[in-house]
Length: 393
View 1: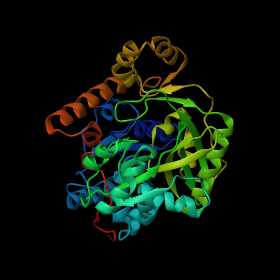
View 2: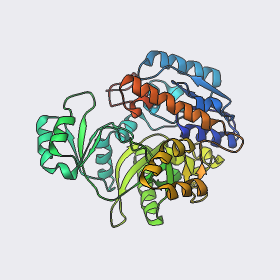
View 3: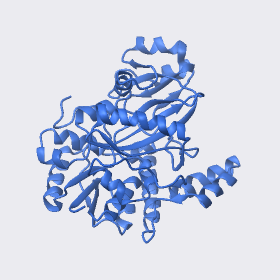
View 4: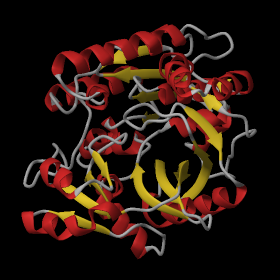
């Protein structure tokens, strides 16, 4: 594999592992983001770490910065890792050179995948299991759901990492917290009982080229996982079949990941999609095959083994206090003893400290601004369905 690759969204640990995969495949790898990323800067892997303006806050300067980066780096491939993918795909609609380089679905497809309402509609059209979902556009829509509130999940149509989600709330709680008519609409979704599972997939030309499925019993307060465990083979096979259908019929090119609820019969129901990199990328152990899966439509890549992977800084900063408080120290020790830490890598351990400092920075921003940690971590890149330059509303 010759040529250079630009990976955006360097704030994400998954972006660093993608960079390692491309470096192991012989590519000169560049990272970029709109926020300082000490984790990325601390790594020996990228040839360079670049900056661009936050696309959500300053789209004009973002485009200029992107033009500068493309002219200077001349990447043959641009791989988004976070929600900047929406802003890139929107620009690509009227920028053919960017469209040629960008490894992501078309903007209209991304909009379907990101919308929790439209994604469910797409799944139902394709014959995939997904929960019944109702838009909440008017006060009457909300009132119609309140008698069934215990059997509903209320969430924003474009929420992320479990932010702004009410699971089986009391009717008065839903009436108080579900806002009508603001810029980020809400939906009500059938509440499914069961275990949570996720998958991460890569497809090229409608062909599934990389796939993994995982679950987690370790999550932060926002619901984001930081320990990743294999799922049962039957669940993995069912999720892979769903991913294959989505790749062929909808996504075509790019990365996508779905969250699911596995019911008591072992059947997974897809509840939402993240059309970007997720922590599932860590399960491939930085192997060159993951990079190749983004370039050619070859045989499908799967993880090399079934060991647990974990984000080391989160295991110490979040999981350890939680384990001490809940009597889970034996489980915590087992993860640390038997699992594979993914932020650090052989010969590249310094990103661990960088990740800790990044986490503290995001936490401080959240505290000072009065926002959630999720909002602080997606500052400058989040897209909630509004019109973007280069894309139709």
